[in-house]
Image (tube, rainbow, N blue to C red; front, side):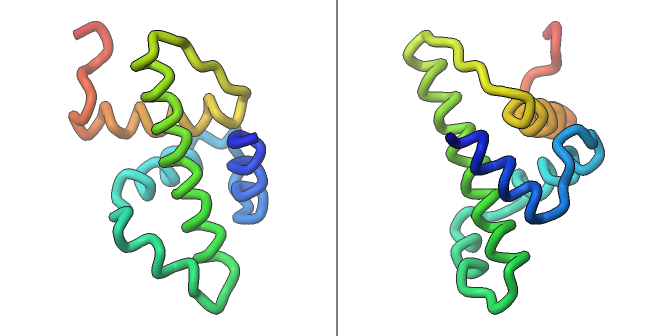
Length: 104
């Protein structure tokens, strides 16, 4: 259900989960957004900032779910939208030095 909600928000924003550049731009935004300030967008008069804030919140929930699953020793597998978003976030986080490089 979480992946479906993310896919719906992407569609409303005109973002294509198969477009690596769009997903990488989204990943940058997700990593740069202060969670304490995201709620201000829920009260925006236009739809786009509200949907974007909801999407960023869903992405945060997605990663919380993945972390909880890993802590319990279980692997969590999502569908294509889940994988596209996760891949972009991990690649951006790795490029920023927030994660160890592959093979390190």
